[in-house]
Amino acid sequence: MGSAMMDMSVDVSGLPIDTTAPVLVTGANGYVASWVVKGLLDAGVTVHAAVRNPKDEHKVGHLLRLAEGAPGELRLFAADLLKPRSYVKAMQGCAVVFHMASPFVRKVSEPMRDLVKPALEGTRNVLNSASETSEVRRVVLTSSVAAIYSDAVDVERRPGGIITESQWNDTSTTTREPYSYSKTLAEREAWHIARAQHQWRLVVVNPALVIGPALNPRPSSDSFTIVEQMIGGTGRFGLPRIGVSVVDVRDVARAHIAAAFLPDAHGRHILASEDTDTLALAKSLKPRFGNSLPLPDRAIPKALVFAAAPLIGLGRGYVRRNVGHVLRADSRKSRQELGMRYRPAQESMEDMVQSMLGRD
Picture 1: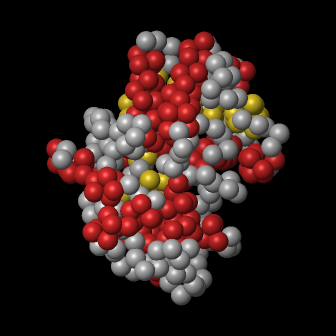
Picture 2 (picture 1 turned 60 degrees about the vertical axis):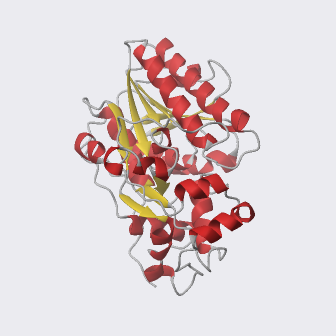
């Protein structure tokens, strides 16, 4: 089916963006970070992009292409989350630091090594360097709703059955949702470091499941693993109905930039456009892709998902706590304080699949 041209921009209209000082973006070649870099470059900001290997064309080529013709300037720096003072050089002269480097994968062999340590040590290294860099006035941390809750069943037990910025994930561990545990520890550490100094202000964004098109050619975000299962045929006979809140990657990028430059931005901000579930997301693709992709149209009964959990890579505990449960997220603060207006999930999903299929 035909479609309108995909919006490949970050709407930063109305934001008081300061272009006189450079900003640092850690993990700049990541799924969300690439969009933040694009939004900043298009606004005329000089971006210090910190990546593990600036000479790896496969990792940074898309960033170089984003800078071509943009009014802003891109400068690449080598840095490593696990190396103390690794970000000092990249941070020189920067008024704003976007700390975005952190792994988003759920299946790891050693959670402490692969998730918790990089998230926690990386946060310490970046924020401690911010305290040593006199020009830094604001740090924007990419956290997650995973730092607010672990499983959908937890949310149903919260006041009003909804997650808010005042809540914290208090059930994840290295063996139960280790990704969520890593995000929780990292954000708590960020607040601990921020309160011990008075030079810069910490502003945190807590996105829901991020969906939408990628700028980097091989995004490692688990979002793409989930959508691949929806469109690749493995779910043609049905999907587990798992409650999720979602948000478009372009909106997440705008929220980061708003958190950096709006004078009164403070605290945490849940970023979410809609509360939905995995089956509803897959069904939202039917009008556009129903004739060309083997999309699921029914929910797998929870009892069947539970029985088959080990075969499909899910823990039975996860199935018990998430399948069939509703997730609700309160995003009013981001709408009011950051001026967010969110894209509908269907648009985000269509653009994401279009980008995955390499369509125009």
